[in-house]
Image 1: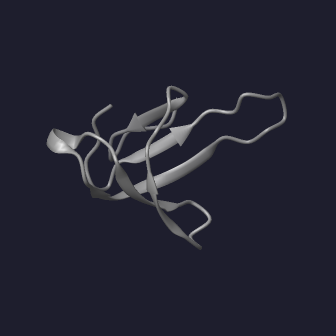
Image 2: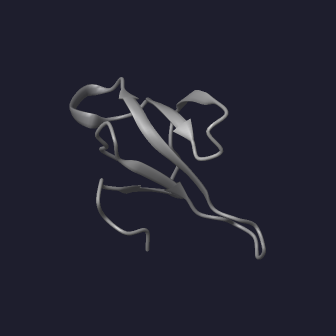
Length: 66
């Protein structure tokens, strides 16, 4: 996975009725856009260091979420 500051990361739901989660990449700590990332969660209340799993997708700035 590669991301840039300003990209969004969408984490898909694993269960019916469960909402997907979304965060904004605030800092990139890996080499060449690799994780870990400091992200601001969509709820706007907290920022965390994030290591995305296989259920995460990078959405480049300006791209719609699939």
